[in-house]
Image (cartoon, rainbow, N blue to C red; front, side, top):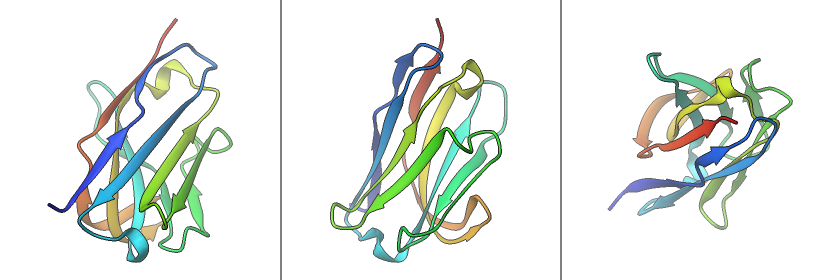
Length: 123
């Protein structure tokens, strides 16, 4: 079965850290860009970062730049999103997506979506 499986979400206090994982099953990530998206309650889904297929280039939305880092381990067929200095406004469901291109910090021409993982930042 071709799918992306996410893990690593949870409840964290402001200023804390989480690392999300996005593992591919049934296909290789070598030829895909990986975008991270999030959807806050009552808001539309937004792109926050996009990493190139090689893993050497990454772009971030201004709202997460300097706090979030995306990395790609093609050997493990997994992409990670390290999130530091989390803020309440980072709360939402986080999705990874395998696409063809990065348009800035948004992955486009999406082939696969993960199921989403909840991140809640609250004291």
